[in-house]
Image (cartoon, rainbow, N blue to C red; front, side, top):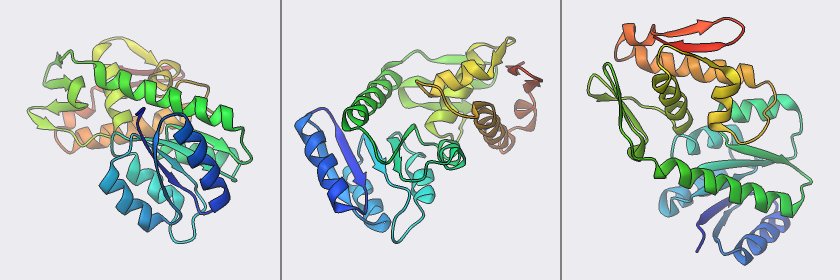
Length: 225
């Protein structure tokens, strides 16, 4: 079994097609047509990846995207909304990738496999990193500040880990975005800045001086001092 996938899609024809193709590839597949049902299924199955339609009858797909991306499950948005703004909002909320309808099934399968390879790569790193009051535990996807675990999403963890590991050096926005995505992302500067803002806010809750150590290097990126 290659992994567990939850499909959240209100169109039964699309959902059935996805389910059949993914099961043929060796995945265990669950399907829900409504958001509230999907939340329950997610808690029960803890899938490795969620294929999420944004246009659902009972819940805002963006709300579900934000909720699922707080966990270590990957999120692939599948939507008829093809405006860049919708894609960017989804990525800012933590989605790992997106495809617009209509889509090519071979491309979707390839994206699914790539995301799951990336997930396994994240979980295979076990070297602990200590920088000042910070302790990074890659095997747990956690960062501790003064002994207190920070409430970071997986992507926030990866970005902060990169900044800490490059202490004193400037990390470009291109390098930061490549840490969390495998392909080109529209308006990636805005997405990076949004993540940095959230990281600073969470650091501020524990220690203001630590948050202030993430410095903006205008026109380029960020540096942890």
